[in-house]
Structure formats: C-alpha cells, structure tokens
Length: 60
View 1 (cartoon, rainbow, N blue to C red):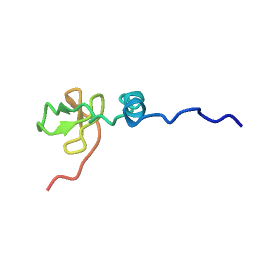
View 2: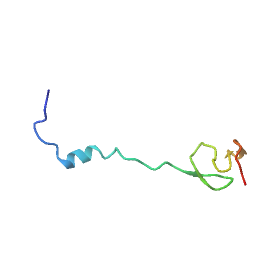
View 3: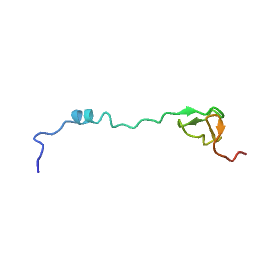
View 4: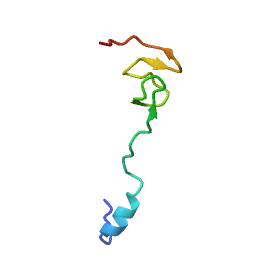
C-alpha cells in the first residue's frame, strides 16, 4: 500500500477544506404573515403559498 513521503501540513490540509462549510439556508418572508419561510414552500404558520391558502392550519 502506498504511503505519503511527507506529512501534509495543517495549512495545506485546511486550504483543501475551505469549500466544505455549512451555509445557512436562504429565507424569504411570507406575504401574508411576514414570517421567515423557505423559498418555494408553503408557510407553516399561515399555510399561504403564492397569495392563496395552500394548506389548512389550526389558528387560535
């Protein structure tokens, strides 16, 4: 089995891993209730999608 001739430095290792990071999801605001939602999804708070009621929710 092949082995590396030299140790990979921490700097070189970390440069390789610069693109392996977690990003926060993009959020949009609901037009009905102004809650943050994922784009192209129905609002879990009020159930609206594209200006109409897509799902029924329990409101008090």
